[in-house]
Every structure is written in C-alpha cells, then in structure tokens.
Length: 151
Image (cartoon, rainbow, N blue to C red; front, top):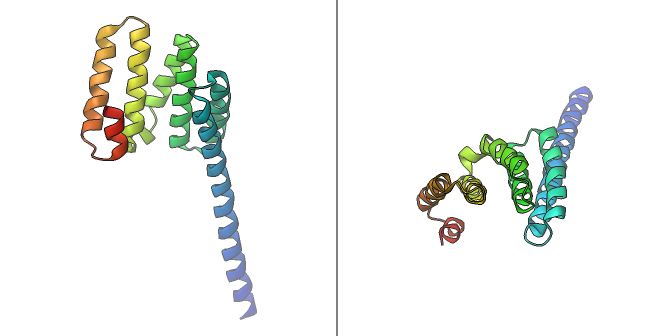
C-alpha cells in the first residue's frame, strides 16, 4: 500500500513540475513578445532585440505561435530600418508557420506587413493584392479585433 502511495505521489509531483516548467517557458516567450510589442512604434531597435530573443525561446520550445509573432515584430522593425531583404525573409518564415492556420488576425497582420514591404519596393500590384487578401480574411471574422484591423 505504501509503495503505491509513493508511486502516486511521484507521478503527481512529476506532472505538476513538468507543467510548471512548460508554463514558465511559455510565459517567458509571451513576456518577450509583449516587450517587443511595447517598443514596436517607439524604438524599432529594441523591438527587434526582444523579438529575436522571443524567437530563440520559441524555437527551443517548438512554439509555432511564438515563432510567428516574433517573426512579425522582427520583420516590421527591419522594414522600418529599410532592411527589406532581411525583413522579407522574416515575413516568408512567419507566413509558413502552422499557427497562422488558426490565427486569422496574425495572418492578416503578416499580409498587411507584406503589403507595406511591397509598396516600399514599388511593387504596387502585389501590394494591393496582399491588402485585399488581408481584408477578405478579416471580413469573415466578426470579433472586435478584426473589425478594428479592417477599419
């Protein structure tokens, strides 16, 4: 009886410990992304630094959503710095993430960012096409975030 109790205790302790470790890692990624978001319209260099840190953590944890968001902030910062080729690479990597299949707002943000990239490169047809795709995606949603992005 006591051996079963010990095994049960170890099993529960192990599960709680593993869950809390995973939660810490996700929280770290989210914290870095929030800081990157906080700086995105104030200090693009700091936003890029925190986005890169979040990307490293998200890759370690195989967190597709974290990688996609970090790619978005990094690409937006690089496009502001007129480093279009490097920014385009982050956009392309971000658009390939599985998380974008589930997160329509994030996919629309990537398409809008790609629209900005194309317009800065004077590729107006591609720019217009991406903006239309983003609007189409967002119009299918009925939540407040989507309505704000459409307006």
